[in-house]
Every structure is written in C-alpha cells, then in structure tokens.
Length: 147
Image 1 (tube, helix red, strand yellow):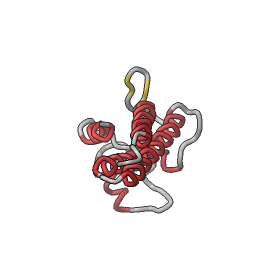
Image 2 (cartoon, rainbow, N blue to C red):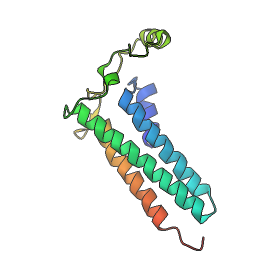
Image 3 (spheres, rainbow, N blue to C red):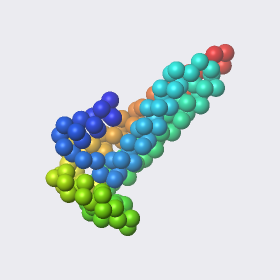
C-alpha cells in the first residue's frame, strides 16, 4: 500500500522522491520481501527468520521516516544530499543531465510537499511502518513451535 502510494505520487503526481524518501523505500522493500518470504515459507525457522527480517526492515523504514519528519519540521539538519542540489561530491554528469532534462525541480528533504490531516508523507510513513512492524512482530510471536 505505501509503496503503491509512493509510486503514485512519483509517476502520476510528479513528486520526485528526495534522498530520505529513497532511504525509506529501502526499508520498505526489505520489509515487503521479508513478509512475503515469511508467508511463503513452510518451516517454523523460516517464518520466524523472514518475519524478523521484515519487522527490522519496517523498523528501519520508520526510523528513516522519523529522521525525515524531523528534517521537514526543521528540528534538525538533513543529509548533504537533502539540499536540492543536483551536484554532489561524486559529480555525475549523466545524473545532472537527466535532472535537467526532466523539467522537474530537484526535491528537497526539508520541505513538506504534501500533507493530509496535518501530517506529511514522512509522518504518515512513520505510522504505517510502525504498524507493519508490529504486525510482523505479532506474526513471529504467533508461530507455533510444532509448525
């Protein structure tokens, strides 16, 4: 659900992800993959292992979203890549050309580009990721010893 929403905002609404959004997607990907493998694995050890990996992936996602939320709300400074600049320490002419050709502004991590009920996308992602992490943890705890 959250990955589909991220892709919708990126490809339909034209909101390119910032550096911190990408970090959140890494955790989301690990969480989704772990949860799928846990659901498809027959052994108890596999379900516990993959379920724990999923929970940790969602925990990482939530942590990145908390950091992003703080950057958006100006509670702390973001990463050097959060400035909105297309030129980084590892200058990549192809990335610069692609950003310029796209016509979209380079996203900044310290600006809220979308809000719903007073919460930004990063704020919502904290809540959803913690919810998914909790579901995975409950699933791991409910694996019966005889399975």
